[in-house]
Image (cartoon, rainbow, N blue to C red; front, side):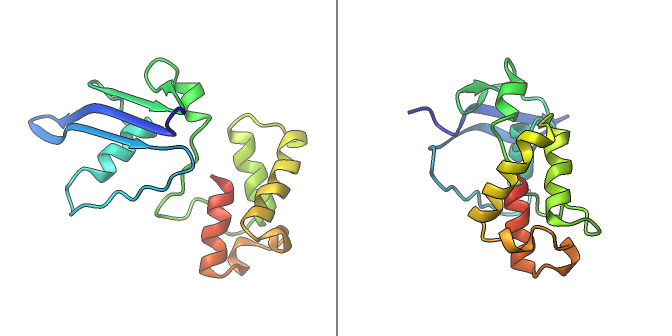
Length: 149
């Protein structure tokens, strides 16, 4: 089975500062992996490479079997991200946020709406779909972020 995320021999420098040195990591499909480390260990740099905020120049990163350098659109289409800081517009409803983010990824409303209903049900927020994000509890807000991803 193809891994959800496969990182092989990735290194990254910021000028003379080496942020990552020959990092390899496999996240299996359906698996859960936590990336822990002290400040400055390279967690954010690795995450920035996986999301293409930075371009990896060494090693290989594959998302669901798609090489991030050779097939960036296919790889990123299979990647959902929940940021540390909030990424939803607090003045919009949960549904409006999800429709907006779907449109950013080129998903038309007619396809997005049933998928939104499905993911909101999965994260137990179907009853909050039309609530403004500001009305959600902290935990509900994080689940809405997961649904968005």
